[in-house]
Length: 94
Image (cartoon, rainbow, N blue to C red; front, top):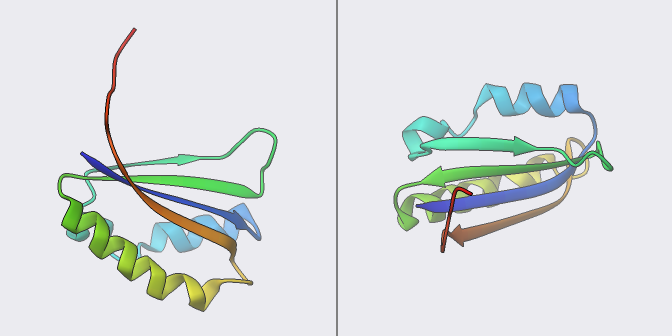
């Protein structure tokens, strides 16, 4: 499994959620198998999204698409976007 991790500040949760739910990059068609959305308790203006893919190429294609999308909304809807591709090294249930 490969995870694409996106982290950025948001102007408002309502505006961000509307944009996320509109799914402009068609996550399912792009190969996203599962996603998680996090918001730190101490910073309600920060959102962290993890998109899981079966293949590195799918994650790289999504990162490229996001890198084209984010400049269009940077400074109005999102701020300080960081995108990283992560390899799962280990996962254990305790």
